[in-house]
Image (cartoon, rainbow over all chains, first blue to last red; front, side, top):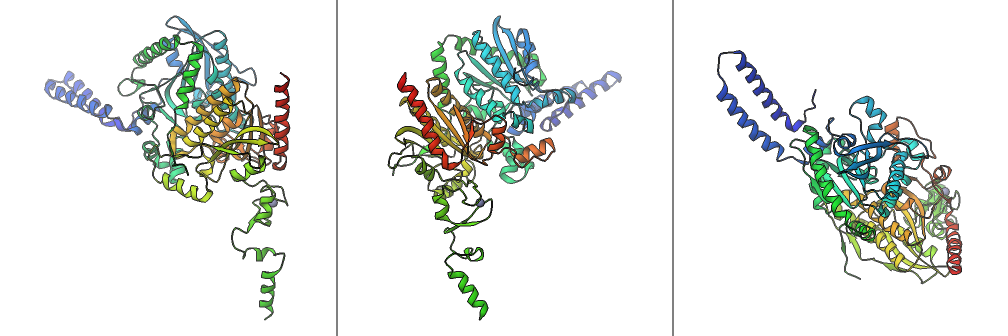
Length: 321
Length: 286
Ligand SMILES: [Zn+2]
């Protein structure tokens, strides 16, 4: 069964009612065409009203939708000749992270992304898309290889966060994330990052240092989950809705804060409604970004990358004493 | 009465006993957080806030750290005037900042600048966990990034003392982005041959641990310091298992290969001096 989100219940209910009436009309003598068309008009208005005015919390629900397309879904639709490769060469292979090489618009690229599962079994195998250090080290290994062979890097960000586990700490979760941040800063190939679902904290950021940072319209990017923020701020994880508004985590918020480059339009109601169309929207932005970055010299690329990050932040100056 | 006599005597004894010490005005005495023994504050400060009894390393105010490290009169502070705005218009944030400014006499959770250690010039960033738990907001990120950039311009080594509970919640995703901002600065500095030394003090967790704290050419820590990415409680809830007492201590990190060395506070200046000397000697030769 399709997962119905809280805010779209009225739409779903009305749609079901219309379907019911249609079936009824087919089997009976009574003509309800007029009534149906009135209701369809109402449905259209209702859909406009709800989907064009999504609140931050609604977007969080969409970002977490169980059928929201994942990295591998987009890879399949956006790239050709994708070859997935495994392992960090140090400890193991983390299936919460996928990496490989492929062609985009006929040109070679390296693709890396967090990977969730869509049902329980796959989610367990992929640790719900929450990487251990070996996931980040696998990603870095592929990035270094991309640099060696002059391939642009495309990163899909989609994680609740780096895994908070005992083994992860023992193997240096902090160091693995920190190293990615630093190494990505110096890679002499274009890096394009796209937040496709939840961008949770350092675990998301570890794939997020690049020349272009884009976000799907209904994705989120935050320092802490709304529930975590609510628990910290008001000692009540139930106030997550309020936390979402206070913490400013939607694509629109990040655009306003001057952190991301582009908001990638989403299919009405969310990317899961039409993955193919959604991939098309992403593909167009990737093409533009790659064209733009491809013209830059290595020096300009790195200089611009530094300037991009240097300006992030908001502070004041006291009158000098 | 006999009772009165005793209590009087206690009050005026030259070496105050434990009970009497509690009567002494606050600020004069301080209790060790670990062994609970009570000391004159001055005695503790003179001992670099290390407990003379058990060796526990208490937090160290940024300016005390600087005084303990740099040759007298050589330290010059940078970007002191930078102060936090309230970019997300977070309720109560400004009040909290003001309270901490008054409590600590600092403008923010990090002090940056340069000075000489045994005559060798070095730049430094010292975090102070008394200010908003040393959390990283825009100002902390900006001051550290600027200090690194300046160190690069003047070919100075960069030394950082970290003390942080992690992200500055009230600055949301801007806080998160300071991790990348500082890391990009370090990459440029490092690519230019710059020497960076990180010394993690209690606590160094979350976003600070997962960015500049772990990015030194040498990563050190003070004994007993709490160092880790995720919080103990979060991990225990996630894995439904009780963690050992020494989990995420400096010694634990050393054992797991995450640190170059654990250095007692009293030995830090000497170690840094030697390290700078070895690096300078190399530069002179080339
Ligand atoms: Zn003690």
